[in-house]
Image 1 (cartoon, rainbow, N blue to C red):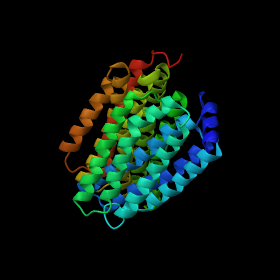
Image 2 (cartoon, rainbow, N blue to C red):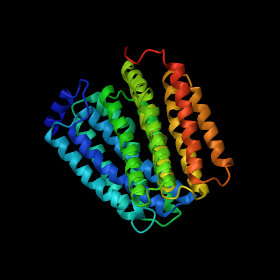
Image 3 (tube, helix red, strand yellow):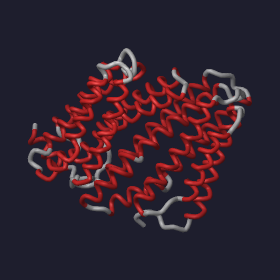
Image 4 (cartoon, helix red, strand yellow):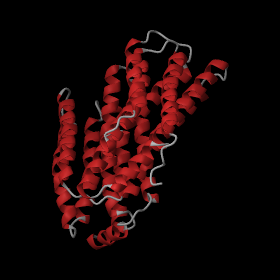
Length: 383
């Protein structure tokens, strides 16, 4: 098994695209995100939003661990494929437990979550046996990551509030481990790493489109509902534009230029950490838009107002953070729009749902148009 994985690492040393196995692996996370959306739909409260965001963190971190691992190992060896397929099946079981992760299924969720992470750690550990530099990098992160997953495992067998306390402690320990991992020299294929993270954004956007379609299929096709659907689609399309038009190519170009430990640190900060609020923002925005499509003329509730406006603000701020991390420059249009959206979430009164959605979408679109005009003469990354 070790020999097969070692050969796969050699083959994967050059720039490559995501493999079909990785795309297949992503499908189980489509279902997992759908489960989180369902969880929040059944608990449309502030507490439900916070718990949903935390579940997204746990899912995102497991997916990110496999992205780091397969970015180095590749997926062409039989042993690696068996690891990944085993992790995929276990993730499916974990996703089934999401709706009751804080209740009756907490043990089920915790055990499967621990197993998913153990498989990722095991794959990297086995693959790095004959690669001292990667084994050293492994030890800067995975011992702390292992302790974090143990906290989640133990917490799943406890009652609230200790369940939540240990799960949050595990998340904090993961961040500490990620910071400490900056000491390691991780082997990173920049093109593949950027593509994999972009594909997860497509997963989140795909969930948004499916949710909007399902919501629209259950209502009358009158002017109000069609208008709400049009507003929602423009908003989702604008989020796609906000990431893939300029942000994603520039992040990839910067990652490609870096070497050694600095490449690993930027990959950690701009992707593994700052893509999390991007994912949360997309999912929360889509959640609110589904209700807008279903009930366009009803007053938008406070939770929906916050999910929509703060969700878009998180999308914008994640790119602001990545830009500052890369070149110490702040995209002022995005920052200004995010501030306005957060203020709107707090100050807006009882507006009709589609009116509020139109305002939020307009703020997003206008900020992107202004940015596009300002940067239209800048050369594209890599040109």
